[in-house]
Image (cartoon, rainbow, N blue to C red; front, top):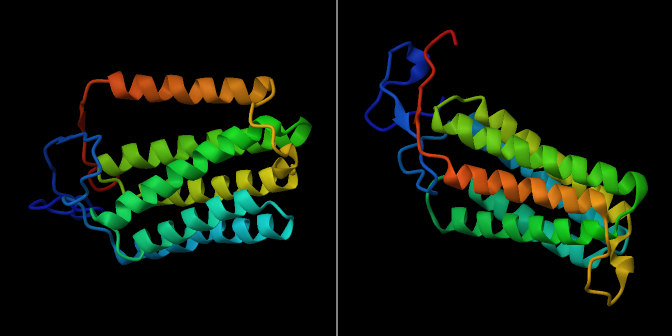
Length: 207
């Protein structure tokens, strides 16, 4: 399990005082067991495989965003913690997400529904993972791995939807599914930023 510096592991059954939630990227107080690192390195391959598939279908821009995200994710999870690798991973992930949201406006029918359902589910899983990690609950790693898988599914759907066919048109078309998805993301982001920091209980043994 994740262990706070100077505290006994929650898996040992010792009661710990509440841990104040943080919104920064400072992970110095956390330790990452080997199994979590390996799990998330493996799940990061979703981006690499999706990139290869996108390239196979001629979706060059999408493929480039995915391979950059995949390489940076792999590089971070091989030795996780506060470092330039974490900053690079976040930058690549945000860049890839923004491109996928933008390109998704050109999707239609089932491709549009599946892509945005996968993206929103992936973002929910990332958010859930982060909140669980604040409470030192080791289940966070499985939520994070699931988010990688859902993001990969969204990327594959974008590739199959032929988002590169938009050509030189840079103005997104009207797409109610895409617009509602972006609105939901922004509302959740603002709500999280405005939410006061509250103590997150460290789970005890048997919870």
